[in-house]
Amino acid sequence: GEDVEQSLFLSVREGDSSVINCTYTDSSSTYLYWYKQEPGAGLQLLTYIFSNMDMKQDQRLTVLLNKKDKHLSLRIADTQTGDSAIYFCAETFHGSSNTGKLIFGQGTTLQVKP
Amino acid sequence: DTAVSQTPKYLVTQMGNDKSIKCEQNLGHDTMYWYKQDSKKFLKIMFSYNNKELIINETVPNRFSPKSPDKAHLNLHINSLELGDSAVYFCATAGGLEDTQYFGPGTRLTVL
Image 1 (spheres, one colour):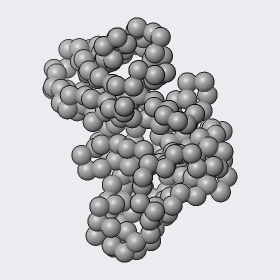
Image 2 (tube, rainbow over the protein chains, first blue to last red; image 1 turned 90 degrees about the vertical axis):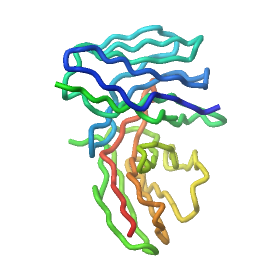
Image 3 (spheres, helix red, strand yellow; image 1 turned 30 degrees about the vertical axis):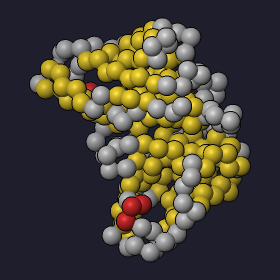
Image 4 (cartoon, rainbow over the protein chains, first blue to last red; image 1 turned 135 degrees about the vertical axis):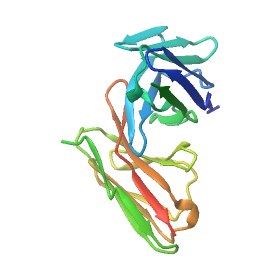
């Protein structure tokens, strides 16, 4: 199946940590991704995690993967107003083709209050 | 140098017209995609090309015809535009072991 679910909205205060959650259905996904979209802009690849990893840290970003529960999360430490954006979780689905397509969640709008 | 570029950035047109959106990449990737983002920000794949060959066609109306003249370009031609075609269209490319997809800046199409 091809389904990725995210909560739609998260509001935090500047300096707090933000945690954005995602669940997916395709257990054969090799990689899972987080993209950021600022208003009126394109999709920026933030980070990705290989499916045999539990955790990946990249500066203020921490990705946690629970493969058993098919749950992915993105933690942003010390959230800044510049982090306000829509965050998309995505998995690669191959189906019958070797070419993968990205299945996106609905996007979580992160609002950072000063 | 922009890795994935799209033209135009904005496109406003009347219903029934035919229009094209162009995409170019300089990453040397073999695979290119078109995605559509609707007004609710939902992103869905439309097409995928690998080495100029159509690989994925996600039940998109045949008014939409992708064309890949070479590996670096994937254009999207849309015939008989309808109101429901209004959206942001993103081109993407993928390559490397991780098959990570990199997106262009998007083309906002408005059909009046």
